[in-house]
Length: 116
Image (cartoon, rainbow, N blue to C red):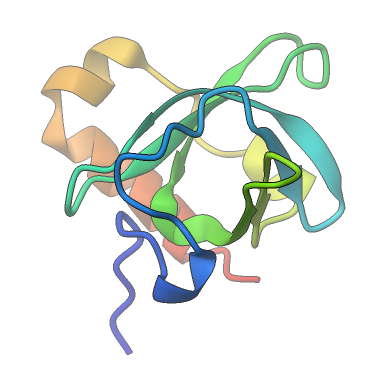
């Protein structure tokens, strides 16, 4: 089975072009923060989540394939990973994110190995 970790799942309920900035993000075991930035780019869709005080202001990169469901009415995004899995993910690196294709491979590989 091949999973596109960098694409929205058809069942997630996301409409391309809809802003997700400010939406709360829920892991399988509780809230992890809010969306600071997102992309709908085909093959590289993602969320950048500001975890706030939860893990001392760290930003994490979540591939769109980790999203289970988006609730537009509640402005919440549900992801199929635990808080610990997200906390232990490679730290978001803005420079690598923009210019190092290996960085997406690293992050995608991490999340592909941790399925809900």
